[in-house]
Length: 128
Image 1: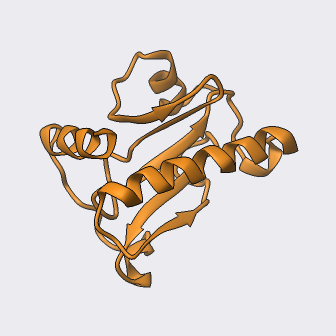
Image 2: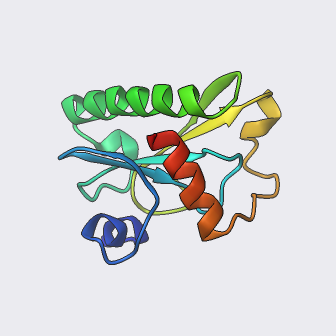
Image 3: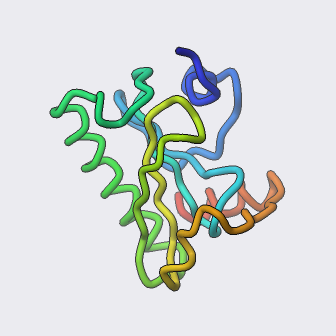
């Protein structure tokens, strides 16, 4: 089950990396709901998040927590919202979305259209 995320992990497709370890990767969503919207993915290919082994899922959430704190310290927001939908890409992932209000995490609203340069600038800000 190869997906666009597998290609990002392999380095075949570039991303705006926020954090990474041996098991997980966090990068900016290229069609974000808000500036600083990050996707957290396991490096193993698993379609459905609840098919991930419990110990790996626990570590993934702890990794996501550290990424959320990093994003929240650099992107002005009230909270970092968390969403797991799993329909967009057949590779388990967690959305971390900077929020000003609950409507900011509505996946039916129009996504932001940011240039690669804008995404790079946001990634540098978060990683500074």
